[in-house]
Image (cartoon, rainbow, N blue to C red; front, side):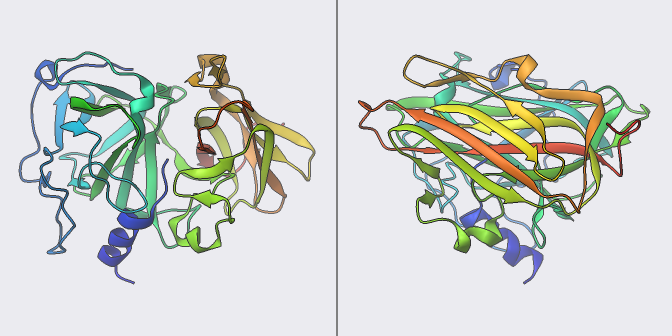
Length: 346
């Protein structure tokens, strides 16, 4: 399968995967990457399905920030593929070598008015020219967010390196069930290290209870769709075994979940240790509110993972018995790690 064929398949099959600021485009210093950002969503002569009547995506700079802005679009919108993309995928290239040290998403109206986080299903940033370690044969999903809209900032001295001229792809999806709303926009801001700053490279590793690799979609369980795993009334515990494909030291873990989520955890079953235990704030009805800062793992010391131990991902939901609305849950982490063991291994 060629890279273009793989990416076309990714666009139609990849699952879903929040600010630094929430601003209208007029407030951004517009240095649009014309010539490197392809507003029509095509590359290498490969045609990409277009969604009619939708605005283009733009890439802009302001200081050390690179912002991808989607829209405006009127919701509910058309959707494309299992990804439920609300705009065509957008290919762009950075004009210089850069290192991402944090990111933030936002969803708002064209005039800058913030919208409820439940409007945003997901934003995905994919490096088409770098292979994924966690999903063999796929390009690297290196950053993104959903309705959690949590600000990410890696420990000082660490970052994800993005090379000049490499093909990066940005995708946005809004929730299907939002009320009719005009001029909806979303943004994804990458904070970059100042030029010349010494930064140790982080690898990005994707794990989840639900299927996170598009090449594994045919093996999804019977109650799982592109929206996640069906959440039944009452308390529900879902687990999935995990084997890491690299030895690493996790420095930052970005969680992703949906409404009615109570817990996500990553456990080393061999060592009988809980490595991550992430609990969101939720409303009385289970509506997701946020992952508070102390629930986001952030440590220069880090914790080790390896290729020989057995691991498990866990997620817990509670759907009120009186709630008739069908819901689907996810429990994912984007793990940002250095290669090899941790100093002073615990």
